[in-house]
Image 1 (tube, rainbow, N blue to C red):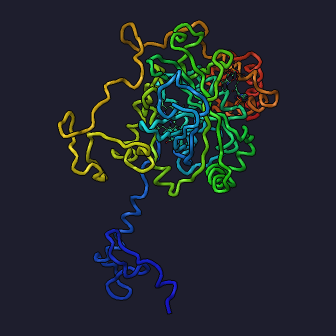
Image 2: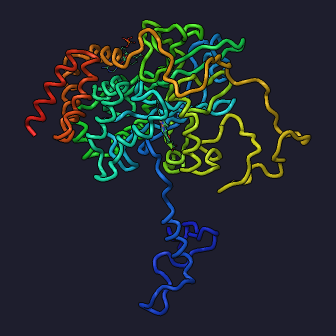
Image 3: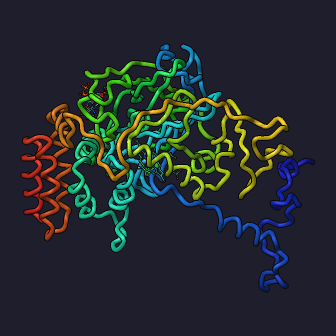
Length: 492
Ligand code: NDP
Ligand code: HEM
């Protein structure tokens, strides 16, 4: 009689030879030591020791899903990007959500910005929009990023995140006031990845067929509605169900409840930039909707779970430098730094052939480069020549820039960004505070005060600088925060 065991395929070693015994190590005699000739034991232990790759230095904790982007408006007056060329056109996507500061195994329900990294597999190559769930950021110059992240991560001595470091840095970096207000507002702890917006955050360039260019900001408005957790709900959930957001996303897609976002852009004609009231390339500021109303251009739906989290989520790579014809960078100094940082991180974290992995390679076209070899090269190019120019029919450049040249003037130097009439670090933080309901303001003050109050008792100077930034954003905001912090520090 055929048993269930007879129907199973044969277990093999990595080289495909049948495994004789997967339960008992080969030993010298009964009860004796293990033998070197038991290569299955060594193969299994050695592979296991190498299962981990370095986690992302930021945004280590995340979840992803494939989806579809559909164009719903004619934007050909603004960009010649092929995937945006026609109403109704669809493009496959992969979106990875994440938190920022926590390590790979951290809980999902924490107060932290959420990453919103979106890959469009377009016919002109992959276009990555590596954004967050916030339209602004803490700093506006890439040179400050490593220092900023050091304050968010673990202190070299205590091994924990320290309020002293966080508030010291934020107090000395007043440009963070807007994003910190956002973070401690209700949207600072989304209930799920599905119930939050995404933003491209930076200003990007769009160029049309005629060569005219525009500055754009992307908004992904959740169709599920905004839902957040209070701090106490989050504290409980983080303990009871650390994988809450990851599970919610997977299960919603399994149920066929595909999450959707309405995609909007704000468009600024290039000629407006120099005279705009704010520096339009300052990542700590939004463009008020009254100045540049968001227009709907598409929908994004997530509809397929990855089969293998390590292969498709952990090894996925996104780079703000992955553009397609008709879309390019702006002079935003943060973005300029990011154009370098990501591919460099990928080479270290995943390896030089990271872009060849199924989740990362183009799906609607093929990559044709003369780069070859390196760790885990799969020989995809076969006998093709590996240099250019060549007379063997190798791929050739298109000879047209992907985006428009931007005029610059002046001498090199470590310049601060060009100043505009209403540039300041506080106005929009105050606007956000005043936009919040009385209840949300109350929770904002309580959350900020609770954290600021943790600063060491002998470092009132750190507290004072921190509070002063919020006072400059809005007098009422500063006064209430000051009172709440004083009260809490008295009780310590
Ligand atoms: P608008 O009224 O035109 O826009 C307000 C925006 O704020 C809306 O997109 C809304 O998003 C969002 N919003 C509403 N309530 C909150 C909240 N409690 N926390 C965070 N965001 C919220 O005003 P302005 O364009 O003049 O912007 C005023 C302030 O709104 C800004 O300082 C900025 O902090 C914030 N904001 C602005 C955005 C922009 O692109 N201009 C985008 C997001 C926030 P929704 O429709 O999803 O509720
Ligand atoms: C991840 C650097 C600012 C969004 C990363 C990674 C690095 C990095 C090195 C890890 C990449 C990897 O290992 O694959 C920087 C630098 C910044 C910066 C140097 C500033 C100069 C920002 C900003 C945003 C952002 C402003 C959002 C607007 C993300 C996201 C990820 C990420 C979403 C996760 C990508 C993924 O899911 O794989 N960043 N970052 N970063 N960053 Fe940034």
